[in-house]
Image (cartoon, rainbow, N blue to C red; front, side, top):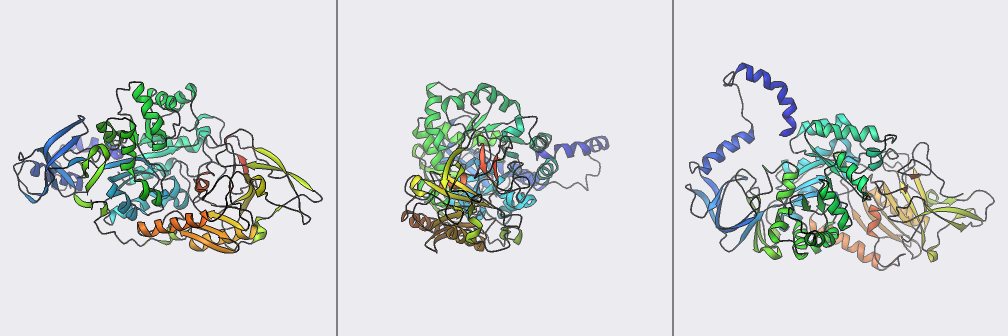
Length: 631
């Protein structure tokens, strides 16, 4: 609603001059206004309510106190009245006893990529609502790089069809992630402005990751990213940040001065505290929480309102094992954070940060009736969950229908590879007459300013091959967008399969989501990529000429509209098959590879799909410098 203020100002003067009564017979109140008019009458006891939730101990996140013996009156999707049990003067169609339960607001994610769960939003709801998560700020730069201007349309479709999970799109700033990458979308000022004006649920610009473009006046990406940032401030939205590697005082101050309001990448406790002190809202994952929260407690932090707990990336299989926002809040409590503070970080703080606290984040009149009932708040033991005023989950089971959504071709047919790939596509040839070659080496999460160098022997046929005994494997990136089957390839160390004849591929490749494949056999690599193409996205594990396991992710190559247990079973089968093989660097599927192709700070040298001026795709994403992978 805030984003329409600029537009409303252009009409406001005329309406004020004409007077409040002018054309009153023609004026139409919005659905939101009509709803709130009804809530007023219900609160006054004049109109009936749908549900009266009786006698709960309610967490007031605004005043940070437990209020005993409270009634919550629900009309439609919203709360109309809340107060001492028996104090409301109206009648309700249904009375539900909650006298032995604690009630807290529905949990809200401050920074999540739903794409990483592998589930489309209507099935994401079935996964997370039983775990208390009723609304999510979706940082959408994953699917945005695939479907471009259809981005917001996709995220709002499930809710329009009846899913109770409320999604607030945070438009992907990394579209594309850098000037060295080209995918299915491009966002500048106009695109961001149009998203903000199109729907009031669009509340922010997603994590601004290209710090060189923000900070360096000579960066090629500077114009686009600052355009998006200006469009966001013009529309009174929130600019989200990504401060990985920015730990020195100058960088932290510059980060905040740029208008980047948040960070979910603070790794070290002192870094997190310094960013808090400079006005940065911290969105804290569990891996960070275990060190950061005890440090903040030791430092005597008095005001925790600029912190939240969040998930970022967690797949469906891991969520079934660990939990979702319930796990994040439980972790905070286990680190010593006061219970009330932990629930504030899981709801109210995030709602205030994004200026949506009039809708979500607290148990108060006018807000959505998102209520998590607990048998033990200190252990986050959930008994029932209400979402949008409906009982949505009980005892861990999701109770509501899952809407049937017919997804269009623009999101089901996104892998544009015109031919079947062959082993020859993955061969790395040495210059003629060479017996050895110099090679550029990379490894996952390598942030040094210079790439690694080594030498490899050349076979009699002129090919350069992997050396798994030394921990070396081959990695390739296949362009999924241009239709020309462009492939970049090089050698990596400390990752990949050691078992001969093996390759692993996926179309989940943050953030542009081209297909990556790691292997020690060119034919296996071709089969793995072709399998991904046939499924229109997913995972494929190949060994000895056969597909051992696969996971189909046909929606944008990132998600699938299938039940939680079915998708989790496919993932479990993938991990089980991988456990039968030998892997460089330790046992088990190298799941982190899907994040190893990021081009954001602090990454330096990286392998991307070939582009004009760089046919091998090896580039320093901070400087634009390119280099051969063999010489």
